Image (cartoon, rainbow, N blue to C red; front, side):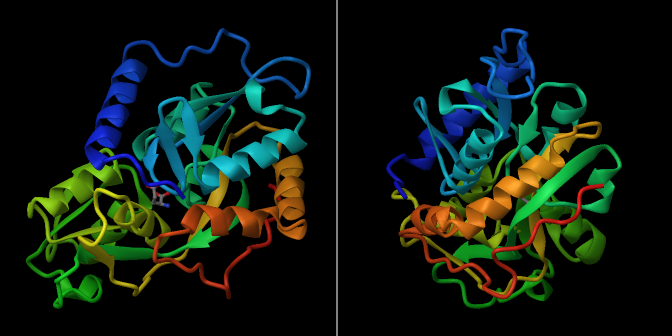
Length: 282
Ligand code: GLU
């Protein structure tokens, strides 16, 4: 994985993309979703600020989510140049699917019953676990129970923030941001004591050149986050996507993508939970 960008630039890029989105949406030419392979584009929502998962560096899009998305798109009949990448921050995902701004989302997007009320999911294609990121020299935070009276950063609209609100409300002071890179910047300046989200996201952020040596993932995951492919509720693509994910695991491309995208990060996926078998489509 290349971690060449400083987080300041990444954060700036994310902010710019958000501003553009707010000013009139993506530049989809109105083509929308096609049934695949007939010259139309497919709009895929990813994160732009999560190194190793979904990351935009100039016109280059990298990360495990991006690689799974490319593989699945190809199986659905789309070439890489038919993919239109769209930034999908945590808080916007359900709305972007419901409002026809994207055709599918690969963005560290946990499958939950609450989200299933408004969107559909294929997958899962990966299982992560919620963890904590702290300063390298921190010795007193080993799990969520050590956060009493502490300032903790997470992201609006994430299961990570929701878990803290549901189980640790009143003890922890939760600071919410639009993206995890913003949280890590605040952690670096001492504004919060820890950042919480999925272990693989934290490991990717900690391994960037700009953050190298500054932070550590606690390594005590306390949830199971099953990453699904977000789809509009009426989508008929679930089974084809599940078949593509199964094929990706079977032909070794899944393992290759995880290895490539976590290289240089201090991260090993949970082998008891990965690679997962996709759930039956509703
Ligand atoms: N996987 C969690 C979620 O879907 C946290 C990561 C994220 O915000 O994308 O909310």
